[in-house]
Length: 297
Image (cartoon, rainbow, N blue to C red; front, side, top):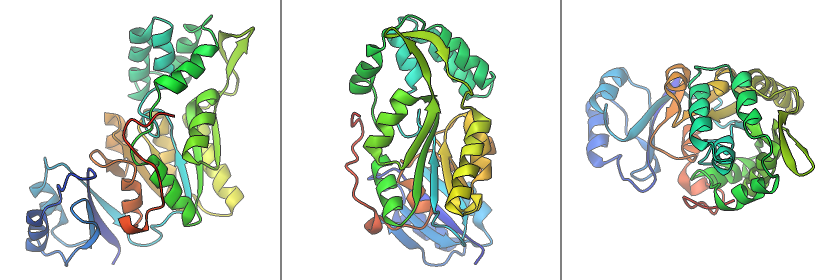
């Protein structure tokens, strides 16, 4: 068996119904193995997989063909904004500065790959010059919420011996808090330059962009004595593409169109626990995580 077909639906949706299972078997699939009743299952790849996928097109189900070997990864590399949390931190800073719509437009274009990441970051941070440093803490307390499934993802992988790293093109005041709350082993992001309690409109160099995320994956894997193939990476924006392509399992999570088109694995309906199902974990094996949609940092 070279690969398995993994079907994943949103938690509690029951979208993987008895009818879907009957359809699977009608296309020649073996009896599936349930990872979570109604929510996730896997079955060895079968000849009529393309026809089956066409038959369920439009259903609220993520379908991914995953290599059967080396599924449970030893390293997780995760983006932060719109991946481990539900917001883009620089957009939230823009809202507080009274220029939220303008900054959001630049962010959206950069994440779609329409703008150079570094140039777009410098442009947006420059617009934040003079913003009081205390605003960052207010945003963290009041406006940042975790992506559902994140705590369970981290807890489960760590319980099974994996190492976890948060690698973000955002800013360290946010990654430090998010990494600590979710239980990441380490974090890396860009540093905002602050003087006399206000943002200067500049960032520390070198800027952590697409290449830096790729290098972080390679560096951490080498330090652990493992291959990039032993890693799972997750992100949503164009600046995540290099690390998604390098990792043994690169997952586009509710991602931008360009990322969806280029990533090998895609999750559009499930939450972050989908990454555990892709690795072959059953729900009964999940680690403890106080996950609730909207949970604040």
